[in-house]
Amino acid sequence: MRVLVVGGAGYIGSHMVKSLLQRDCQVTVLDNLSAGYRDAVKGGRFVLGDLGELDVLEEVFRAGQFDGVMHFASHIQVGESVREPARYYRNNVFKTQHLLDVMVAHRVRCFIFSSTAAIFGEPARIPIDEDHPRNPINPYGRGKWMVEQMLADYDVAYGLKSVSLRYFNAAGADPQGELGERHEPETHLIPLVLRAAAGRLPQVTVFGTDYATPDGTCIRDYVHVTDLCEAHWLALRRLQEGGDSVAYNLGNGNGFSVREVIETARTVTGRDIPVVYGERRPGDPARLVADARRARAELGWEPRYADLATIIAHAWRWEAR
Ligand code: UDP
Image (cartoon, protein in one colour):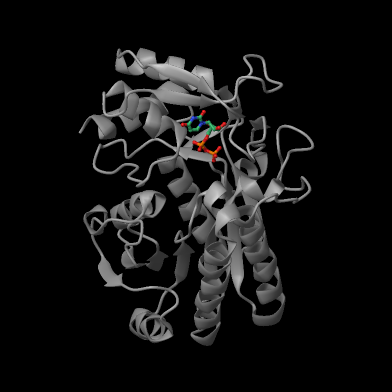
């Protein structure tokens, strides 16, 4: 298969590129390197460019003859999206529309979209299935939900088929140790905890201890990046076989609190991890856990690395390098 991976130099995109190459796909990566790394792209054709540059997009599609497009390029920080909504809507919504329009023009009809649990907002029930009300509470989540709605319209009008994959908490690293998470600045819990374990940070701050959860800290559903990539592959194959447009929630269905993550990291690393307890971070729901039964049933998705200790062990191997 010939696949365009937009954002293929980023955290999840770079793992995806590796997995497509292992499947003998012809891969083209388009990335502006605003948050990605050229050396994380382990093969294929690399094009340095931005979705805002229509001439670059045209050129990529003229050369490509793609069977499918996977779109990982987006800004991902909730707090920043509240402070700078213009940046988020421009990058995550308008530029995505550029991409869709070029796909329509070149009759490329299979699109895999990186969506998020943030489209649900404050959960009304747990676990969260696909039909849970979509009620995003920040510009990041609203932008992703806008694109999902746009995709439904593009299907009706132009026959563009899509699978929106709503990640819960992407975590872990390439099991072979070749790739991992490299956000700068890093804001995610597991890499920060591991930096504290490695002595690269003095401590980790727990954001809030008064949530309505058993130990007072927030509960999240951590899902291994390699398992997310597997779901993308299965989704693309499904569209290739004539499947309809659809959205899936991707998580393991197990929630872990911030304290449990830190405790597991202590066990996995054998290191001391200094902790301080701070205020809540605005916009954090107490509990986010996926009901991913639809992806399992319809895609045959079977997460291989569902165990939190394994997820942290893979991330630790990367961090320790
Ligand atoms: N968190 C924390 N300290 C940190 C970073 C995150 O306590 O330094 C908490 C955060 O409040 C949330 C959970 O860890 O409850 C996961 O946060 P992360 O930013 O990794 O992912 P998110 O859930 O925001 O997608």
